[in-house]
Amino acid sequence: MKVLVINCGSSSLKFQLIDMQTEKTIVSGMCDRIGLEGSVLNYKKNGEKIEKKEAIPNHQKAVSMVLEALTDKKHGAISSLQEIVAVGHRVVHGGEYFKESVLVDENVIKHVEDCSALAPLHNPANITGIRACQKLMPDTPMVAVFDTAFHQTMPAKAFMYGVPHEWYEKHKVRRYGFHGTSHKFVSQRTAEFLGLDYHNSKIITCHLGNGSSIAAIKNGKCIDTSMGLTPLEGLIMGTRSGDLDPAILDYIADREGLNTKAIVNILNKKSGVLGISGLSSDFRDLLDADLKGDDRAKLARAAFAYRVVKYIGSYCAVLIGVDAISFCAGVGENANFIRGMIVDHLEFLGVKLDTEANKVCGKEAIISTSDSKVKVCVIPTNEELVIARDTQAIVSQL
Ligand code: ADP
Image (cartoon, rainbow, N blue to C red; front, side, top):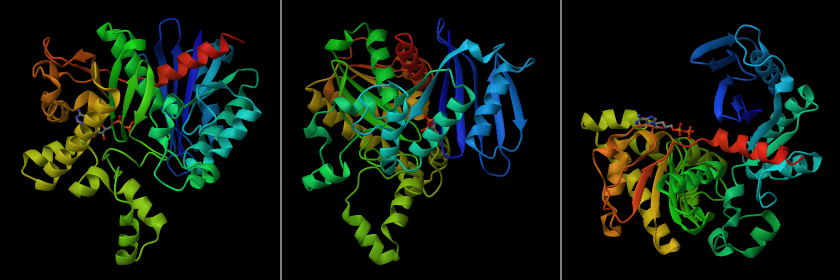
């Protein structure tokens, strides 16, 4: 049984073909620069890298190129599209409509459209991807898997902002959270890896990548997470500011002669560790610069780690204790120095870092000592696998 996973952005389409018996990726790739000059399809099969430079004017063309690549006689992986039992689509915002993954029908698409105002860059692209697949594979079931769904178990006291209630009623202003498929996968895997009962556990998952978020998961249910109405809230990220005083908008609007749209754009794209360092959003560049004595690169890394520590501390309070803390995504899986900066701050919880084990890069590992009261792990995330598993579970009931 093979499931195709599609993740459509505004000018890109990432895909993976996953064999559900082995849960291994057979082919993975990406169409980049859709609708722009220099569009390209790249994919990888059995370690072999294939590149196809061709005009990709829209997502439909991208999907048709992906399907052709998958069935290509020489470089393909399947003999016919019939081998794909279902397509799982990543959808960024499911609002309050979707608490779990669903089989796509017209009503689902309408609700995803309704949430487009909350994710204007992502939801329309996700719908375009679904429509393109429906056209080319009309008999194959499509499943939508939402970044927000796992966080729908948050209680109202955690998701409500301290703003007039009409904003929630009229405009759906509340905290939703993102990276839900990652937090779900990593928390489940953490419990499995450590031999904990997932439904009787307290886990904090730290998804630290270019976009970063933290979640507090009690007995397998998310009770709080750091991102909000949009992914801008919470941690200091690669280019996003994370939490700030909202009065800054008005203050900077007056001083820099900018409107709020322009300021929010800066808060999304030119802030975070990039903004603080003035150098890069990439933690590898920041480490190099820090080692060469760049003070702002050092500050950016310190501010990033400090914010993570603050969230972990507050989530320990919210969870009334913690059994395990897990790190995932580009920074969480690879940047052992940053992990060290964070975990060293948590001694008050009885956390003890195993500095040797913490050298691990991109592999599952326990990085706390055997006598540490709280276990700390690195758990590589696999959002595509969650999408494929949910897709398989839904279509197997049809
Ligand atoms: P996203 O999916 O949010 O785009 P990723 O989870 O792929 O991001 O994380 C990308 C980030 O991970 C990079 O910007 C970089 O800062 C960081 N990263 C990746 N590899 C390393 C490494 N070996 N050391 C430090 N940071 C790394």
